[in-house]
Length: 394
Ligand SMILES: Cc1ncc(COP(=O)(O)O)c(C=O)c1O
View 1 (tube, protein in one colour):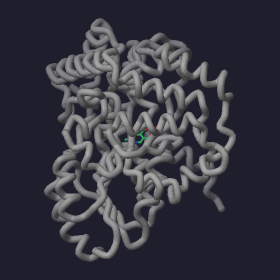
View 2: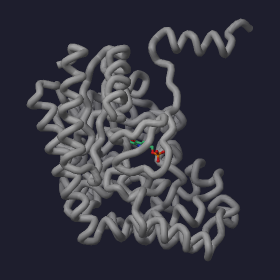
View 3: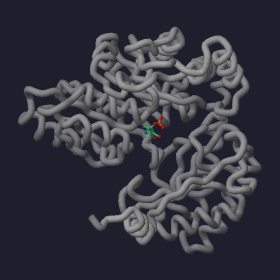
View 4: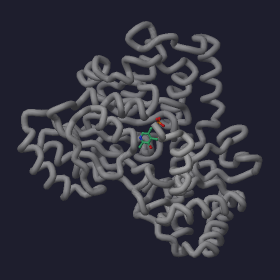
């Protein structure tokens, strides 16, 4: 066998796709120290600044003191603590669902939920730009995947018409990101609900980037679009706007029972520890308070200011209104040069390349936080325009 690890790394490098980690020192605030430099953080999913919130830290510390550091086992052995059930009740109340189930991460949720719902003989309709963890879940399930063009519900209707007749004895699932993680646009959920009804499908929405942020009470993209009750599986994560770690599925009591019995990532993994569960529960409560409301408004204002500033400077930004603002550049080399040049200006925005995004669509993906100040964002827009002009991107 002559395929060495070194060869493989060199091959990745030759395509401009070699990745490495960058170390942040200290807390995940709006300003951080990255590789020894003081920089403005423009690529974190800590949208509301809760990863740095004293109430979450206090809840975690108190939970460690009362419950210790680990759950000690998987959920179906002895790893279900009262904190898991309390968090699940809090999530169900927040999302307006009958029940909820907590998973160890968003990736674990998607790779657990999808194979629990569909398998051989079933069909999954998946948006072309869905997150990698959804794609992994579909692959693991063995169900027949049908990818539909991004956010194109008319094309999806044609595909459902074509494929469901052939597979009408099996189960059918439509799955979509609520807010697309690399594009920042929102799925047409009302139209997907109509299709799910027409074809008797299940509808699953991954709202990793909408939870805590969208809707009047922060319940996510389904609240924003008025369809929360019509979605069978609302998956979301605690590690982004909620400033903690882990994920949930907000579902009916029946579906919760099925997931407990079938989702392998739930069954065969040590459950989340007390410190994480307590922080998550505190975050779920906090986003529903006036403080949460204020943070959401600030985030929306910051996102508008930043989007408008880049659009006025002539950058091409995909349609959207959320806190995820990409500049699609195309070339991976230019994207990485742009990212490096911004770091030298004191701005940390990670370049995003294939396979995270389709080939030819490498981009800088900026993410806004409620804790960015007007001065931070004015400076950022000016320096991004300056570097963009220098590199001929704008
Ligand atoms: C849309 C989406 N789903 C799922 C995940 C995975 O969540 P986690 O980071 O909790 O594993 C992410 C991001 O990481 C995401 O962007």
